[in-house]
Image (tube, rainbow, N blue to C red):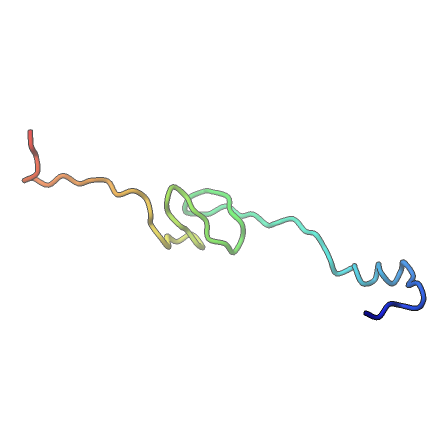
Length: 73
């Protein structure tokens, strides 16, 4: 592999690294659920997946419904 013949200055390395920026993630509060979540990401709340304030997937446990003919009491 080729190696530089002369040492590069610290300024050259710093110029190259100026584009590597660490930034804090942006959080928002969902208008439907009131939960905080990462921007532009879907988030789960109580077994339901929300995106942009709308319900996308509902994986919450189904509540059993009792019909009139199934009462064994």
